[in-house]
Image (tube, rainbow, N blue to C red):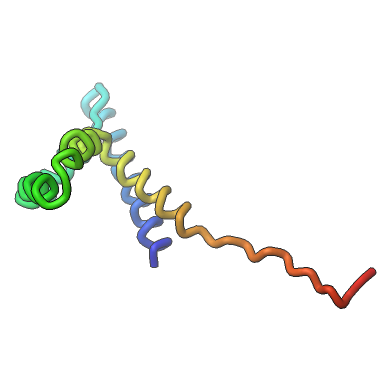
Length: 105
C-alpha cells in the first residue's frame, strides 16, 4: 500500500514538474509553483487552519521555520522528495542467502 502511495507521489511530482516546464515555456521565463501556492489553490481554508493547529498542538517551531520552509520549496520537489523517501523506506529487501548445512561440496 505504501509503495503505491510513494509511486503516486512521484507521478504527481512529475506532473507538477511538467506543469512548471510548460508554464515557464509559455511565459518565456522560469515559473515554478511552490508547495504553499499549490496548497492554497487546492484548499485555502485548510492551509489557514494548519498554522494555529500545528503551533498550538505540536510546537510553534514546527510551523515557523520548518513548515514555512517546506511550503516555499517547489511543489514537485516536495511531492517527489516525499515519494522517494517513502519508496526507500518500503523497498523490498532481498532475503539473505540461506546456507544449506547438509549439502557440502
